[in-house]
Length: 215
Image (cartoon, rainbow, N blue to C red):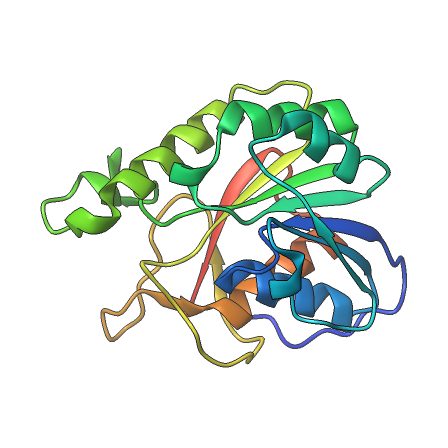
């Protein structure tokens, strides 16, 4: 499935992004803002959040469930773009539930994607050791989300290589299998990942599900 650049001016929403100063979070914040959505950009150091029209930087800690609940309350959607090894899935899911946010979207990892039926990328012999702990935590987070009956969640996994690049708006979407191009490369830019996530917020297609994006 290919998609093109979108500039929606209808059905504008109020969206909170935790981890808004990070590499993925900053692109997600910018993408949502350029579409006209009102973005509450949350980071431990709000001075690191890039300034955009429609963006309100606020200080927040993803390990503070009560504080995050307050920050997410009243939003149509909340996005968490934080390292799994530096956060607590129970607190994040608890905040999403307690805040009664309309949707909860998670910036996932590629490690939980399948490279063969029932075989996750993180379990393969060539998986980089330095990323294994983060990938395993991400897989556990996805498994926990799948147990939630009263939370409208979505988990978006990038491809194996998740890097800075261009915003093209042209990419493929998948479900639980790692996407690989004809050249054997599995990758997506932060910029196009942000487009895919913003598209999902505006046009829900993966409710209570994981999906993936790649070239």
